[in-house]
Image (cartoon, rainbow, N blue to C red; front, side, top):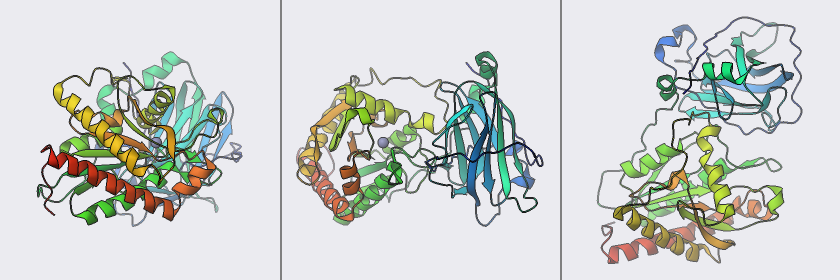
Length: 433
Ligand SMILES: [Zn+2]
């Protein structure tokens, strides 16, 4: 049980003389997420409401050592900020209004002192977030924004000092306040219920959570899967058979639980989560697409590893998960859930046979594990791992128009085949285009 301290330190004036070294090479996994700031403590004078365009972050660097570390980010103009800490793992979260990140591709990928890495990106519409991973417990000594002066840009400054776990835990968010850190989701809309089944397309990651990153090619999983989801949506809508909902349509963060909720709220008949992850070098040149379904026991070690990675998305974006159940065991219990599981497996097989031959498939292309995003008990759900960004060959294919076109065509065919079968067996309404 933790306690949270939210620090609102605004425009505190110039801090000079702190030697600031440019971070060597840092790959930007561009992402920021803003936290919802209670109106009462967001001073009106410094909110960005009414500003025509977002402030632009142009550079960032770390300075200091294992006792005291400073993060500085250059901004085109001052913004309001809020900062707080999260435990397990140790993180500092800085929330700012809408900021456009134009940082070097390396920003945040290498640490210094008390900081092991940091991420930035959209967290919710109009809100950006900086998530700082720590090497150990810290105290936020200061967090403020300096006005531009003497030709210097405005600067966001976060000063961290080393502390012990007991002191750190006293500063961590209290449950009530934590709830405010979850972004308000504008529910995606779909036309009026005309009897056609709803399919939810879920481009993985987004905003402050880049997903897998191929640093060499400067390609992020979140961008690749959003592009493919958009293409797939267009093609599915063109069939006239379905209503389509996207869990996100832009580069913003959506918590895993909200993705599941979107599917349930729309009484979706199918949920497809799209991913393109990467593997550590030790696993060699693994390639190919894989379709995952939910199970409480992973089909193999690789499926377990992937589910662990994907389930970390909320943590990466700076949500506090300390009160969330850590596993999905025991959720596949009742009859409806068993039916959902059967439909998920049926669709997984249909999808694999449809895409096989078009995309290169993994040597065992159907697997299962405890993915949080697949746990809607009443919505057949699969997670489609399109390939590995860590594979040069996969990367080349996945980012090519030709490959995306072929694969989305094959997916539409597989989806049509699945729904045709379910219509024949009376388990979904017959589409009336
Ligand atoms: Zn992913």
